[in-house]
Length: 161
Figure 1: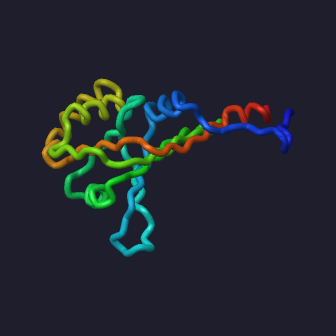
Figure 2: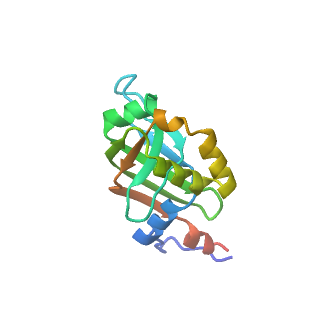
């Protein structure tokens, strides 16, 4: 078995192209937003979310207009999103940035894109029909990625095989 020496420097960072392609993949994201409802020592709100991202564009997510998540996003004006691959070799992308748009009511095209991103065609259409009333109650947020954190353990894992 080959083991890297302590002197071996191995970058775990992804290139811009790699990180954008990874974020554009099918992952349930964990959205993070500042939560000051309990005072300055309150931990951030972290919740799993569906999102849509195309390389070079904004991160799009939807939620109920009057949810705690929506209120906190509005108050903070910025969010973080972390996505990962739980299968070895592990990889993750974390991105944060300002919310640059809130669309109210929710963008139907963005909702359709999310459903088709996460569900097979027939299920996506059934889901959209079953939840069409949510369009009146949901909002769409768009976040401009500014700060990226990444790790790809592929090369590191290969050194141990």
